[in-house]
Length: 405
Image (cartoon, rainbow, N blue to C red; front, side):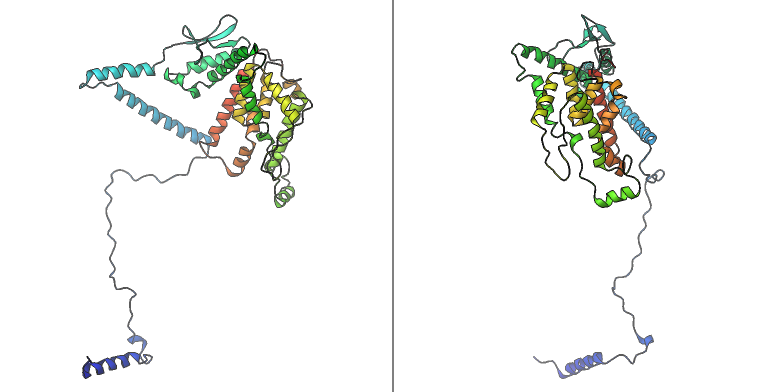
């Protein structure tokens, strides 16, 4: 169906008018067109309904140790206050169920109280014993009395202090709260295992043989012998041009590791294992560590098998804490009361090799990285203190009055 003639003419006129140029119009005759046709709506402001002062602006984390300690002290006070509130709520009996409340009140205090008042160190039959009131301290597995040699009075006093610091009998079942007691019991277990295997003519599957096999695995992956790759040529030239080469902040990680390794290895190969050759297990760009010589393995393993039970337990703790055998051996031979080296001691070296030196030796790479990029709060500082705590327990375990300096 065709449209009527009038409508067709009107459409044609409209199209021709739209096609005409508009250049003859003046600028005042131009009509402005908006991009959108939505009317603007003003924002609705809602009044605050909260009560009290506004919150404090955020502050950056504290950098000084004093502010960190103050913040942790306040957190500890809040935690202690919350524990007191919970304890007071548990002590209030309920009137609805007297039987159940009385049973709960009788069981809970017994688990929280400690059954001893005083802790004493007494000499009994040629050894030191730790007594909880009148009860001697016993080992958890065999129930034998923990007996410390008379040459180790500091170890006995430390054991007594450890048990005097406990506030409940339940804490005595947690090994992380009595680490020194666990270490002393480990040494006594090694002594018992040696007595059981002594009559058979060999140690075989004894605890001593198992510890020796475990410790020898750390020799081929010792952290002291794993050196970082050489620094790039540009970085080395920068250190030389600025006068930062050598000891100090500009020293590369590889140079620091090599200097520490040469000092410790030189001491051990001259006074503990004379003539033994110890080489770096990871050097340059290699990623697979190489093993030491077979003769080196035999000499060091034989030396480990000849240690006393107290020395062997201390060496095991030092190796597991520092992830290396050489640093733990250096600490052991410095503080043990036995004779495990030739001319070992502070007189021969000039200065005692203590816990701080052993801790820095075990964390060379961590210290170097944190020196460049900073520490992570509640991570690096906690690991540092825990490492020193474990190495300090080694010193307490192996030292004694029989040590000749």
